[in-house]
Image (cartoon, rainbow, N blue to C red; front, side, top):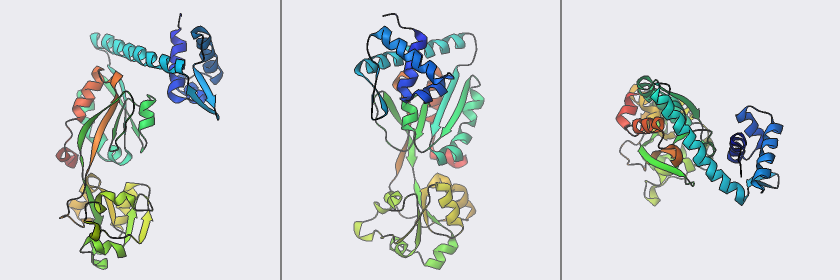
Length: 300
């Protein structure tokens, strides 16, 4: 088989997105050009590379084999391009870094200021979202920082730091509602990312079963910053990552309602595809990120 590199790139992009329209957008060509290129590659390969059922595109067995080969080829070409650029003192390339919204916009961009200043040959682009696995698997982003555990073939994960939480409210709200113990939250308005109060799991599960309050008045907000602002306005009591409210706690516009409680913690992880992990620019950024400590985040 004589496989055309352009056709392989087109196939690889369609295989990542499983959508001809999205692939055409990423390749800056028409959808018909994408379709034509894939058809020519299938004729050369002598087999169908995609199947379609229920309106959804999927890789065939032949398609999966070729996709794995494309991953190796294009990642190696990326590595060669990086090495050539490095030898001529040119830019190492671009890294598209994904992160959860609140962490990324509040602290990550500030923390990475030093990396960007010290590595002018590496260009960073940012992507903030609560859904990071699909963009990472589809190569829409190169690395992702997330507090959720993801498991996917060819994906590697490294632990960054522990995520601490705090129950927050205004001093006025605490005083008005007489909040002294977790059980008192049963008669207060609770601010949560979900109506069922599952967002509060790390607080509730840190308490003995008999001491867990049953939330009767839950106001759902789909953004942590909304919870923080609502708590400052004495609308309710919230549960948020502690790094989100360090400034407010210092300024005493919010109080940590139960500072004595040892709440359950999560971990932040950095994810990247194994095939990209050996790129020099990826190694540099990963090493910088692995030095994140809660004290540094506090300063940021």
